[in-house]
Length: 248
Image 1 (cartoon, rainbow, N blue to C red):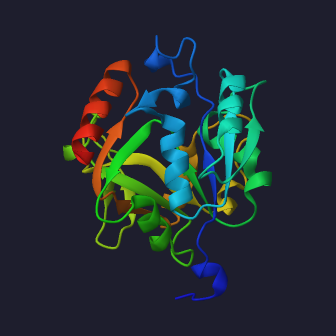
Image 2 (cartoon, rainbow, N blue to C red):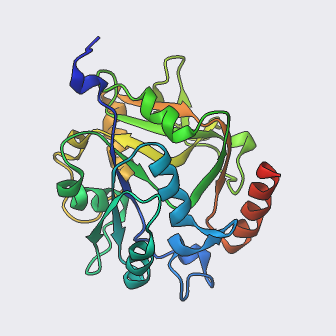
């Protein structure tokens, strides 16, 4: 096993995906970008930024497209508990998840980094899940590491799962007509080398995940606690209630 400093290095930069249109969240997103929708009294964007800070992330890139001035203004007002924040501007063209990360690579550097959604929230178990994910990262075995939530106990998700995991943490995609125990919880650690030979313009991060899986280097870590996908207006109220229960 490679125990070089490069293999053991832990990610200190992150990409926050905040450029989406939030169509499923309408009418809440008619005048407010989805990352600024509040859950438990705090914007979704701040939930994620605060978790990144607590996990030791020092620099964050946030991409913007829909109502970008509101997001930029909000980020400008953050003072306490804020990492250094850079903006990746997608005003001219929305690049989807993979294309958005690829555009921001010049800010993210050559080392592995986190990529996080803003519409995935959770209540942690005894130890913060981002800290667990960062500590589990092993570049000698992995090119992509995903945080996964059990489908049976997740809120706001009614699908058949995304991945199956072997005893060593290696992942494979759900097959047709199969039910899998884990859903992607919106957080990953990625080796930037995965973006070589990818399309220009818009593409999904699923292309990156599948590329790592084909090489046997896609791994997962089970989320400790409970996970909520906040993708619709009704899910906002439900997440409010679940988070209130978790701290009461």
